[in-house]
Length: 162
Image 1 (tube, helix red, strand yellow):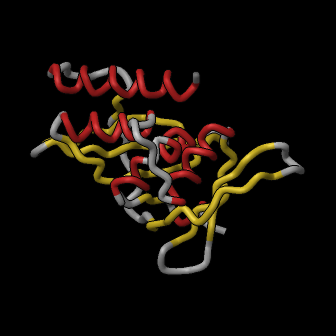
Image 2: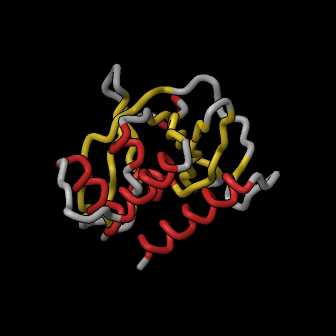
Image 3: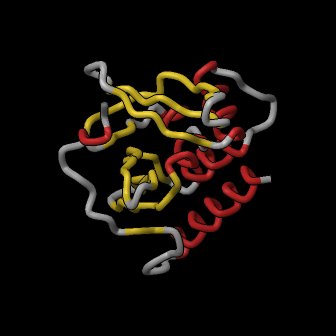
C-alpha cells in the first residue's frame, strides 16, 4: 500500500508541475552542496541486529560507503532493479519513471543528504530548459528505482561516506 501512495504522490506532483503552478506541493528549492560525490547502489541487506533492511551506497571512484536503513518494500524494489527483474506490467517504480518521461522530463540526478538525523533526497528533474527539485525520503528516491532504472547519477556529500 505504501508504494501506491508514493506513486500517487509522485503523480500529483508531476501533474501540478505541468499545470504551471508557481510552487507545487512537494517541490523544493534547496541549495544543494557543491562538493558532492557520486555513489552507486552496491546491495541491499537484511540486518537482523537492527531488525531492518539497509541499502549500501559506495562511491564510484573509491571504497568509502554509506548505509541507509530502509523499509522492506523499498529494499525489495531496489533489489529487483539491481537484479534486472522485469514484470509484464509496470510496477509503481516503472510508473513514476514513465510519468516523468511522458511529461517531457528526465531525472537528472538524485542528491541524498543527512539533515537532523534523517536521510532526505532531492530528485532533480529536467524538463526542457527548466529544472525542478522534488523532495523525497532517501528510501523512496532509491525505491522508486528512478536512478537505477534510468541510470541517473546518485550523489552524497563527502561527509556521509565512511
